Image 1: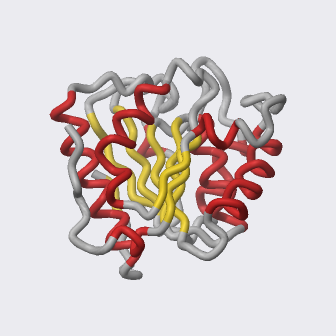
Image 2: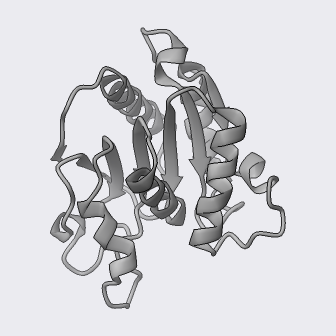
Length: 203
C-alpha cells in the first residue's frame, strides 16, 4: 500500500538516495518497502540500481568507491536540493560516513552493521558515529546478528543519532503493518530534520 505520509510539500524533504547492503540484490525488497511508502514524500528517489549504474564495475564491498559514486550521484541528481540518505547494512556505513564530510539533511539506517558476527569491534565501523552532526535515525533489529554480544545500545553514538529498536533480525523480515508504522515514523523524523529541530534518543 502506497501512502502519502508528508503533510508538507515533498520538495521540503529534498531528494532521497538508497544505499543497499552487500547482499544486494537479495535485500532489494527492503528498498521496495521503503520506496513504495516513502517516495511520494520526497522530491525524488534514487535507488541502489540507479547509483550502481553510474559505476557498473564497482564492487559493492568497496566502501571508499561507493562513497565516491554517491558523491557523483548527488551532484548529478540533486545538486541544489537537500539530501536524505537511506542506508541498509553496509549502505548505512556509506551513508553515515558521507554525512560526516558533506551536507546531508538526514540519514536513515536500517540494520547498521555495528559488529560482524563472531568478530572483534572494528574502529572503521564505529568511530565516525560519535562525530555525526546530521540528524540520524538508526532502526535496529533487537535480534540483529550485527548487534555485538552486548547489544546495540552498548555502542557510542553522537547526540545527533537516535536509535530505534524493532522486533527483527538483520534481514528485516517484518510484516506489512510493521513497515507501515516504521515508514510513518521515518517520515516524521525526516520532517523534523527538514524543520531544523534537534532531537536524539534511544528506544
